[in-house]
Length: 80
Image (cartoon, rainbow, N blue to C red; front, side, top):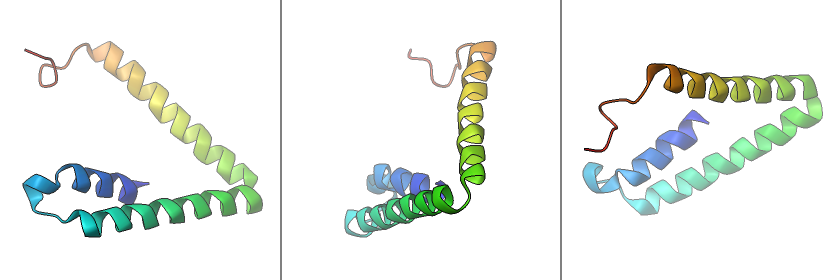
């Protein structure tokens, strides 16, 4: 997942970094395909691990939302 996010970020920042979309887009696609195959393989062979991965992902999103609410608005991202 990290490689996929880095690839997407690289694509979004390509004008600033000088990266070429012709290289980034296939890299993102291949990474996404590998991630899908990993998920399918994990679900078929170790469903408990797959469930744990989903639970950890859901928990991280929930904790992030709670953290953002507790901290309040961030000055760096506030419009103004």
